[in-house]
Each structure stands twice: as C-alpha cells, then as structure tokens.
Length: 545
Ligand code: G16
Image (cartoon, rainbow, N blue to C red):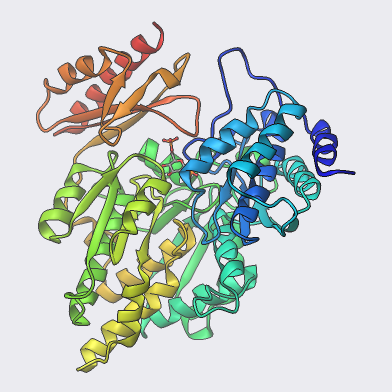
C-alpha cells in the first residue's frame, strides 16, 4: 500500500472526536491533555508528527509520553520529546495543533505531506520513536493508536511500557547520544537507575542521610519506579538511606492523585490525610508521573510546613554556588535562577539579595524555564509546584571535570559538583532525581527540614482553581503576570490588589486543565485568602460574560 493510503487506513481505526463548534485541540503547557476518551485520534496524529520530527532530525529518536501527570484519573495526555530529551520545539507545537485538528483523514494526509514538503523532509528516510506511559488504564488504547501511526508512517519504534515522564526523557537522550563522547547513560531503564544510584553515592561523599524519608507517590508510576531504583543503591548507602514509600497503589486507577501527590499538597497546603501524618517526619510527595516534588513536615508547634519548588530552587542554587566558589570556578561559571509568576516573592528576594544571583521570570511550563536556564553556565529552574531541575552547560561540565584542584577542599567541591551533574536529570524536572539532590544537600549541610525552612519566610499565598465557560478568553502578558484580555479584568484585579499591603495577584488560563488559576500573596494568610477569593470572583464574572 502506498504511504498515503496506509495512513488513511490506519487513521480510520482511530477516528478523531469532533469538538463542539468553536473549540479546537491545542498543544498546551505539556502537550495535548484532556479527557482520555477524546484522545485516541489525537494520539494517532501525534504519532505521525513524531515520525516527521524524527525524519526532520535525520532519523534521530523522538520520544512520546502518554500521561496526564497531576490531572484526575479520567484524563490522559500525550506529548513529544525532542532528541536531547527536551520538550518539543515551540514552532512544532503549532504544527501538532494543525495536524491534530485536520477535519478528515484526507486532510490529515494532505497536512502531513505539506509539513514534509515545507520542512524538506524525505518521507523515505529512516525514522525512530520511543514511547512510554503512566499507570492510567486509558494509556493502553492510546499507545495502540500511537503504534498504528508509527507503522503506517514506516517508523521504527520501541515501546518502553510503564515509565515516569523523566525516564522517557532520559531514554530519548541516552538513545541519541549512545556511543558518542556525550553519551548520557545506558539505553535502558536499568541504565537510568544505575546512573542515579552511582551518582547519589558519589555526591554524598560519605555523608550520612539522617532519619527516614516518607515518599508519597500519588498512587502513580513513581511508586513502583522508586522501589525499583532503591534496589540499585550500593550497600553502604542502603545502610543509612531509609525510605518509606506510601500511596503506591497502582492497581486501583481511581486513587491516582486522589488526596495525595505533589499537586494536592501544593494547592491544598496540607499533607495527604493518608497515611496519618507523623509529627516531625521528613516527607515528600511526587505527582502522578513523578516529575514534580514537594517536601513537608508536620511541626508540632507550627502545624504543616511546606518546602515547595521555590525552596528546592533556592536550596540548590545556594549549595551549588557555594561549591562553585569553593572549587574556584566563580570566574568561569555564571549561575542563574529561573522562576515563574507563581514563585513566592520572598524566594525571589532571597535568591537575588541574599544569594546574589540573577533571577529571570518566564511564563508557566517547564519548556519556557528550561529554555532560559540554558542561557546560564548553570541554570537552576523550578516552578513553585515542584517541577524543575538544574542545567549544566557543556562548558560548565568541562570546567568542572578539567579544573586542577589546588587544595583538598577544592578537590572535594569539584568532585561533588561532578557527581551532581550526573545525579540531576539534565533533560527535564525529575522528582526522583530532585529528591536525591535534596537529600544530598541536607546531608552535606547537616540540616533538618526545619533548618531548611529557616532560610527565609514565605509570604502567605493562595492558589485557587476557577472553572469558567471558556478559559481561552483569558490572555496574559508580562510573563503571565497581567491579563491583556478580557478587557477590564486586569483593572479590576489591580483595584483589589491595591487594598492590601505587600500584595500581588494574577490570573491565567491553565494549559493542562479546563480552568483558570488565580494566585495571590499578601502580608497575612487571611489577606492572601481574601484577595485570592476576590480575584477568583472577578475571573468568574468576566468568564461568564
Ligand atoms: C505541567 C507542566 C508544568 C506546569 C503544570 C501546570 O505539569 O509540565 O510546567 O506548571 O503543568 O500548568 P498549567 O497551570 O498551565 O495547568 P505536569 O506535572 O502536570 O505535567
């Protein structure tokens, strides 16, 4: 069968669901994400685009991840990973949106061929795609559609089955760098565990991790994967690194992200009710696909204390900049921090004024932060929701690995930095890798979570989710800090913000859920709550016009 007919025949098995008049499928903050029953045709079409993308990159491997991460179990999603493990280039997000919204199979093939022609893609050249999925049962059907697209487009593929999102990013980069001087690691899930386990042991440098760490895995794929990872730790680390995995039920799909997980903890600002919080215990939560991380503990005096993405960011920035100074690399290596509008104002002040590091602000979505972080030699980026990582440029890695130490202290700093390069997932935010990084830093500093929380005091804040008829009328400017549309909404928000001391608030449409988000911070908790509710009402009013 000719190429076009094969695609049409396969597409007929996975028809696209027509959306109500005026609505289109959109490649959002993290790919296409919505109710799983709408996604089969979408995933098929994403498979076609992934194969074009691979051919555009001369047959390099492209990744596809089927996940809806923090969303409820009824949702699913699909996103494309570029050859170095990064998020899909933004120009291609538009192509993805166009291709997926093709009105018929005929139009789909035409658009597919048009993309190939416009991008000088030879459809007879080799192409390769790898893919994985989280634990949602709907994932099975979606990867079948994906595989059918890849077969129809003559694309070689590997199905890695269940993976965390960051593992798929790792595997994509490892596949494309295999056998080169910049090899990212062995091309297997085991290779991922081995790399992290060895780097963790090395980065600890004989320091011991104190106490037990309780890890809430959101009843998602992170549970079994973390349990697997722990088996690869060397015996000397296993003897003191005590991890208690909780909320790891992946057999009952309905409990995924339910009253647990990083998104629950961050938005509700409380610990998962189950298992019952133990006062003083060091805890952290991953999200449904293990790319976000939040730490917290129950303090008998202060109740719940949360250490979110901003805290992880400032902890990492402070530790790494001390190491860079101790390694005598400050002249060669520039460190910068990237945040979004959701970053607590106190964290921004701490990083800029106390740590003396430049801080940039981008729109939500790790793809935006990642891009800006690449402009530094060492770029630390985290969203407040716990999604982020640290990027080391090729030059920074060379400087770290080639610098001749002049003292034992310098040698020590260089070796720790070198281990961190391997420990931290350079492709995308990775909850397991980030958790290990935090554990290393706390062990080096000899800190408890309370010590960590003492570095600065968060401004009270509140995040609210508001459902409106059409979230897309809410358009933003200034890194999402202001609404440009609907007209008058920002003026109304400004008027409310002016009534409070040290206050700030903004509203934006979510790119992963059918809702708007409102963030507010103010001098006191009750003021932050009140302001958030007032702004939420404004969003509701404008959203119902
Ligand atoms: C995804 C993105 C994150 C983003 C989050 C919420 O996370 O990867 O960068 O912060 O969605 O985005 P929004 O506010 O636009 O819904 P995840 O963990 O759900 O993949």
